Image 1 (cartoon, one colour):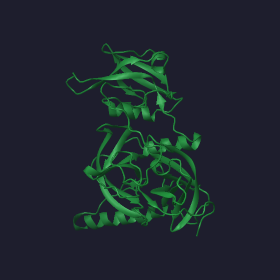
Image 2: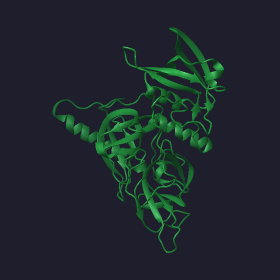
Image 3: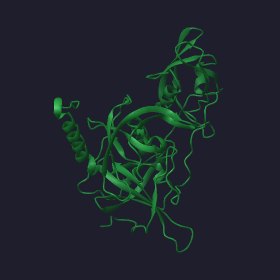
Image 4: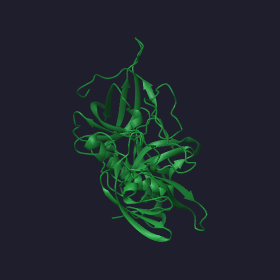
Length: 364
């Protein structure tokens, strides 16, 4: 049942109590993630990159940021002061998400469910983040949704990210964010320090990444095989037009061609490039997706079988290359522990220098 605030003078106290309840209900799902990167210089200590993660299953799977665990020598989690060895299930640099699994389950941990919700939260929606800044215990922060976009400046995101008013703290990348109903809204994947904001990957994207990583250890990007251009000459905004269908691709095989206006892909109505990026990101490889276009003023329907994007294809929004669109951001191959956190999205987690724990069974 949706949460309702009390009337009159009790509104503020009811809101405060709700945040307290959400924190108490979910804090035992939060872990600190640590990854060790050995130095190539004899005598130097390992570099330890830290971040936040949270349990998402009874089997001990942990969701966190990819930027904290890119090719580490060792990775482990800290839960209530106890260190537990973990193994890598998979990472996805495009979404800055990674999935781990602890070797030994804590006796009393909780987990946060990942549910499918295609509706993104509206600006003004209140959020609670629970993260592990620096070496501190799981700590609550609150704010609200301030926007949704699939790009910022020269950075192109794989799908629409939710922007929040919650500032980034060192070490809280990978934190879950909940709404007042206790539902997971998304996972913190980047920061925008100039606007005192953070970006979160919405829960539907998190679920898609989780499923792919569990199934194959990697995220398969869907691909239809057309290039697009924007037509801004219409009175009511923009139209997303097919520039051409690439020969031999699913788009070409079903008969899409240049000049088609893309109206709908699956459940997504296409009014702009944000809609298009979302439709392509959530289209799973192998599934059949209905596509509606307008061709010379007449509606034409296609059913396209989504292919896997070729390795040499342009990474921007599943081989969609609009005119004057920037290239997508690329994560560095490995975090740079000696550098401060980047303001670009996704941002690497901060790091500390410390000797690594004994690798293997949980250290008490």
